[in-house]
Length: 574
Image 1 (spheres, rainbow, N blue to C red):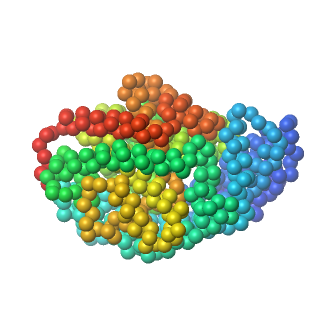
Image 2: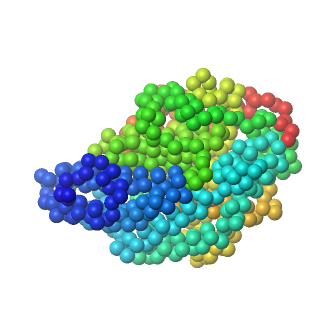
Image 3: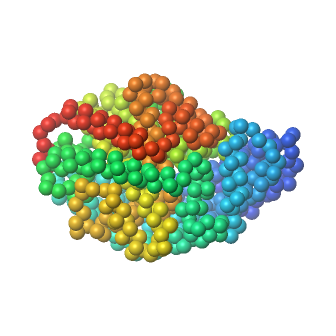
């Protein structure tokens, strides 16, 4: 095979080892690079990365769909621990060649900034460290993906207990909560040991790159050019000041509606206005068909894009034994297609998760028009703006005949989501504060100290729920947060994006057509503009201002009050 002739499909790399891919990087390293050849050289490099990353993505998708298959795990690990770390090393070498050329255009400004940062922080000694971290992440997925419980004589994966957390029978809810938490309690020692090693490796990688700790390393590593650790602390404080009291009011209203003396953690998902939980769909076909109609209403272009995903089998949505937990949208850069993975069980939460992941998918479709792979994928703060905004922009269209709910049920679902917005701000702040403590504290490597810090930080942000006698269960919550294990510090982005999405939603209350148009324009920018510019294009501000965050929390509370006034006034009495 001639190294300079790239394969026509990622399939050619599906079983490749690094020795099969390295010659293509050798070829790019040796090609003449000057003003007259730079555009062709960049296109060839971009196409190579598209091919390899799509092959890697396909392997990852196959493994998360079935974590019990050793061959799929082997394929995934070959990419994540062998090929991708070595590809990153060679990509930094190519970036050095390109930066040294002095070739600059406005469209490549953000790409060059990222290249320069990658060059500055790259250390060859970190290549095997990040490879081992990928192995440990796969182990985490294997442990959590295999978790099941016996429920009424049936072995079920943990996501399938979610409907029982919404039961009107409090005893059923408590049993579901304890059952879903017990596997994490039982695996606490194994997961803590796994994290011990992850912590050690990440801190070592940071020191290798000249940083005091992994928190300080991760800001440039994630290309966080537009905000600082101090800004994140301002976000924590703003949430504590405005969202935490708002959540306390939401939970107190819930306690009164349910007629309880105190709220316990198994009382947080049940609908206080209905005797039975909303079941918006019964089958995956119904789930996707209604979603297609909802997106048509938001914008016909988005509806057609979602239909493409249905037609090309780019969705895996139902919960099954052996699937990895959680949900994600992965971009297949060669084809310019997204893939959505989730664990749906027929609840309102599933609808909102699909809206969220579809926002990522629409971002992938829109940004693929950018010619080079580095120009398409912005930071997570912009990616999550796309997803969280879609949750809010699509919500008015969830009522029948287009969507999933009767008008009355739609009000209940919308109320549940707005309450979740407030709860999520509190959760996001606590997760980011916890990760900050882990990597900046002298005790971050101590498992018992981590658990104690989690409890302390949750107390700071989370009130209104009685956790007495449930310390192990409360600690287990952070072991269930896969981001902390697999994607450290990927969480503040959700909070930053939620603040932006609420601004876009506020715009949509005045002019929905214009709000969606600006949203789509921002998605099409990909990564060719700075983060503040992308937010401005979408009609929002990148902000950590406590006053603005307080205004948005107040808007959500006002909307919640308005919906409550339209719902039955009699207490649910359970």
